[in-house]
Amino acid sequence: MTGIAGRLGRLVAQRLHRMGTHHVVGIDRRPIGNLPKDVEHLQVDLRSRRTRDVFRSGDVDAVIHLGLMHDPRRTAEELHTWNVVGTARLLEDCADFKVRKVVFLSSANVYGPRADNTQFLTEEAPLMAAVDFPAIRDLVEADMQATSFFWRSGGRDLETVVLRPVHILGSVRNAASNYLRLKRIPVIMGYDPMVQVIHERDVTEAIVLSLREGIHGVLNLAGPGEVPLSVVIRELKKPTIPLPAPMFEAMVKGMWRFHLTSFPVPELTHIRYTCMVDGSRARKVLGFRPQFSMKETIRAVLPPGGE
Image (tube, rainbow, N blue to C red; front, top):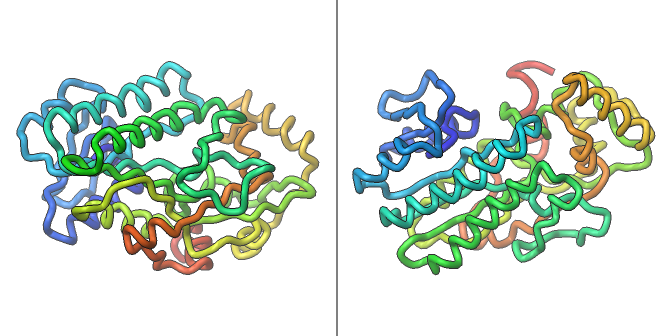
């Protein structure tokens, strides 16, 4: 499993450990502690030769790829070599060493929030996110690599699963959770888009379900439903700061320049336009049903026992 040092990686490792049927080897260049004793961590770069050495043992049954880089402050070259080149090498290793299963965690954000989006996007919808947000181009390209890999493998000798979850909420450090953790939440005047969210533990369960034999394909992961953004914020009992769109964009642009925010201006499209997906294929193929309610999912961004 790549990306084991991240919050989601830890959750997946703990879930597999509790099942007792998998020996987990995590690859992540970041340090990590408090893993179960039988979970092995290799602190190496995904692109290094040592990563390929893991496959040489010949007993790798499955690869879970969670190790994409989502930091918009990284240079374009670094993002490309990590997300695109790194993913290509990993998939090449899987093919060369006859791995039987690859699970690639993408995001429903690759579709892109747009004013002209249809109500619920299926897995066949075009990936338009990079049109308005160039920083996500490499994530879209990595998704397309994994999807192409699935079609080339034919789902027979090597089963590939590409998961595209909606906004993941919880203790994860992503844009959606970070936005909802703000003490006062800025919103764009005149906009209240419908949003879909999913609990981090529901995503963990979907990843584990994807490891079953016979599961393959591209699957949208939708959460417990869809609600207006205002309902999400109201559930958290957070005050809002309504701002006109031009003022909001100018403010975020200035704060970004001086490293006062982790949100680049293009992220504002997510609180302006809709990007909702059809999760019926995951329900049918995976048997996936979110176990956490809308209220539980929204409140997962709060600290334990806190408001």
